[in-house]
Length: 323
Image (cartoon, rainbow, N blue to C red; front, top):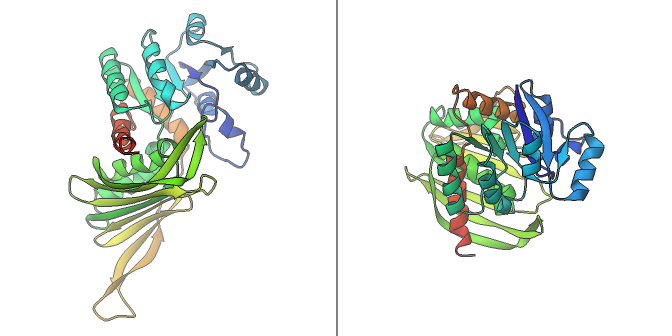
């Protein structure tokens, strides 16, 4: 059994799961409580109001106002970092003082590439496992789609189109990450910035835009990241030689289209929906924790590591330079 703790008491830590319309587990608190191999022994936040609100919902879980105080009172194996991303570097550095086995950090895991590179190196040297919560990396639907692309089940990959919300470092960064998962390392070759549909996140303005990226095989993808924050949008059209895989309905359903002889035009083929993409739905937060535990035990590698998340941060830093 692994003792776990959470730093930061916002949405990702526990509040999102108060939305009764969400059926799956979204937060670190609920995941640790429900996982058979973890105990949530402590949480921490410097905000007294957040501490008080959390205690009303989870009165049996000890709440601390400092990381040092939390560790002084508890033996902790796995720590979740759920604070604003510009605080991650300082916190991740402080956690190296303690004898922990793994960190599960919200995205993006640092404020810039330099900080991220430093943390990756430090944690590797100390043997601390580092996972970053781009949650689709543990989602069976996206894992199945990635396997279909890798094995060229619809032929070679030609192009990907992604549609998502504004706010590059929060909502939009999920799209960059999943494209890295599907296409490998990507370079940014063109972008425009959208200053109209901004989102306020942790009292900061975040913007979106449109982007063209390209992998080592010169396969390009286009990203539209300008949708209003309240309009749920996460869609992918993956175009291959012999068919198309399309993820729709906020990225929760996928369909396969095959190019078959057209009934309307001679010597042409047209994409026809043949089937819904089959996958076994899973609790991705629970599977993420299982993956982290297995990595600690040397049985698996982290499915979204610091090095994986660094690829998205490199893209975001490139955009930031011309803002």
